Image (cartoon, rainbow over all chains, first blue to last red; front, side, top):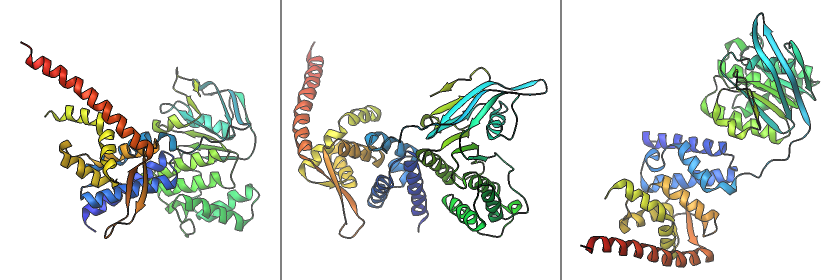
Length: 280
Length: 113
């Protein structure tokens, strides 16, 4: 393949991912990509010149097809997570002023804010890993928590992690391995290898964390910037999984500093001092 | 001609031009781009043309189907629907009336003392 043919292939691949991000069905995505590919072959132009960036073209397509997006999802269900008037201090430093968050089944809440404003602290409190100084957290159902880092055991294999987490959720070894491998495959990762966690790359360790958090389909998912080290494709796939989990009726809280997903979430909890409002 | 203004003008009438070309016969994106170029409207990039086609398809003025090329790859062919044909008739009347007024105004401006 020529160098240009190669980069056009990459462009078309990126377009497919961008269209998926806009939540088009695979069918629509396929037709738009195939039509662009035919145009590139016919015109002999490089993709960037004919169509601009994949992001820009996908946005133009999205605008043209506004009414062909996926049907609105089901209405939200019952309350799965309710955090009320949570506060936390470390010594004399106030990390969290009274903070509330309610997430129903079938909703996604994004927790945003500057570094050090207490996002991870809030999530750890919701997960029950840390006690608040005041306030309470109610969780209805099985809970999965994915930390920002750590959370893996250096000398264990990925599958041994699955067995460990699966045991806590009532699955036998075989079922745990099966669920873990399945979850890993959706993140384009083959978890069957015999590589200890300490030898995995940072991005792959985060995939391991994410698979552990979601093993057995918890009702409440708490995800603390779980995509660190993911490549762009896996990052986009991650958000597709978030929307799918939501549509399946899970309650999801994602800590994120990336703003381009915020128009699609149900709640934004901004922990930046002075800016704390929950916008629906 | 000032390229930016030309682009602005074209954006306003590109869908009308595409409908007019499809009124002659069904066609696919790249062929339409070539026809627009030959008609003197300049090179229309795919990133501009296909969103217009998609919008026309969504609003029911054109229908599309995929057909294998004789030698090359499959292409998406567009043709007018009955409501597309009606739209072409209405739009060409509207355009002539609108352009005629602009013409008249410019003539007046140029010929008046």
